[in-house]
Each structure stands twice: as C-alpha cells, then as structure tokens.
Image (cartoon, rainbow, N blue to C red; front, side, top):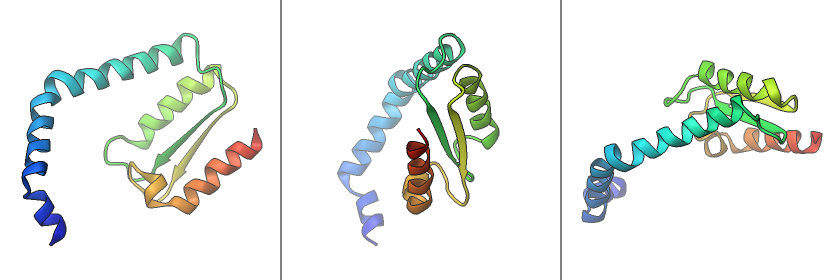
Length: 112
C-alpha cells in the first residue's frame, strides 16, 4: 500500500516525467557514449588492472552471453580477469544475493 501511494505521489510523477522527457535527449546518448568508450578502451589499450565481472544469472537487461563477450574482450589483454555468474539474481546481485556476492568478490580480492 505504501509503495502504491508513493507511486501515485506528485514527486514520483515528476520524476517519471523528467526521465521520459530526458531519456531520448540526455540519458540514452550518455549510455551509448559510455558503452562506446568502454569497448574502445577494452579493445585498444585494454584494462590495465585485474578485473572481475560479476553477473546475475537472471539479469533482465542483458544476457550471460553478452557478459561473456565483455569478459572475452577484457581477458584478451588482461590475463588477471575473472567471470562469475551469481545464480538466481538479476541486475543487482549485490542486493539480491549479498552473501554470495561478498564471497565471490572477497575471494577475488584475496587472490590478488
């Protein structure tokens, strides 16, 4: 009930309108530029530090295959790259499976 009430509130409606208005002109181009910059950096100079990719198995925004392509591109130039999929989590595995996420990240850190 509280969530429904918050969703019907004026501040929420204003935030939704702002996002809709700015999505095509501000947000989407910014995301596209950032993705392009990341891919260029990975392909050209590579990532110069050990890298860990942690992905949710049920991420609705992108597939595990897309994550593995990212891993492959980074690992080509950075041998200290690891890829981990956290089962039963979406695009926020650190919130959805915090114990598993902590274990995976801690193990990576300790391994360095």
